Image 1 (cartoon, rainbow, N blue to C red):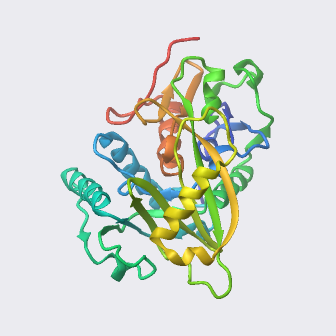
Image 2 (cartoon, rainbow, N blue to C red):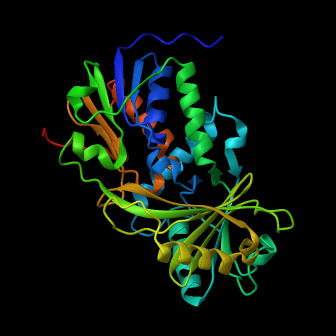
Length: 351
């Protein structure tokens, strides 16, 4: 039998996306009485690819983010999926490919950087032998065997259901920390809205469009792995789902605008079909845009703000990947343990 956790105290989590729910679930498992403040707007977690891809997302200069991503991917594989249905995992590896010579050079740059970090990948000039759906002429690539992808919406729903099983309570959104009530500890995990609760947090919204393409009878099958590509300098990803493919994602500064733009959608469709032409026969089922909570150095803000308040935001494009690491980091803080030196915490002065 699983031992009953020792009662710890009351915890309020502000934010009901993948980060807030992961933190809430982990705290409830440790015996905290947890309340989550969330709204009807699903936020960035609902508009995401769900890639768990520290290797293929990596880029020189982001060594610390790579380290955190690899640690968190290990947590996904060793415990975080417990209590979630197995079908939330949609792919078990990633194929990274290049369309032209300049893209191939970028790919080699990433491969050499990963090798220098102690995570070698094997470059190939026969990418179509690995994924026959690729367009004629695409030859350069590498496979990241340990990466995963998950159905982002299924994960959010499953985490919420698991939280309910653990006794987590729901409450409406709050506009100030005072509205969060008299909990022993408060965790700010509401993404781009975190600075409204704690002025000075260096988090800004970065827009990204995502498309959902649905498989139709007679079409070529859905790819079995994530396909990431550089297309004339732009990045595009194709993430399998049970009924099709998620295509993303643009990235640009546009305030809080969440309307999909024609230019962004057109580029995604052009690039996706340049990589896998068969996608042109799929149904265009959804166009959406989300706002990633970005920080100046692309590192998440996870740590203690004052004796009562913790923060977990700023995960940018890595929210799903870093959810397990964030949950464990906050759990450690709740136990009074500091984050280890290599992990990234924040300390912001009182507002």
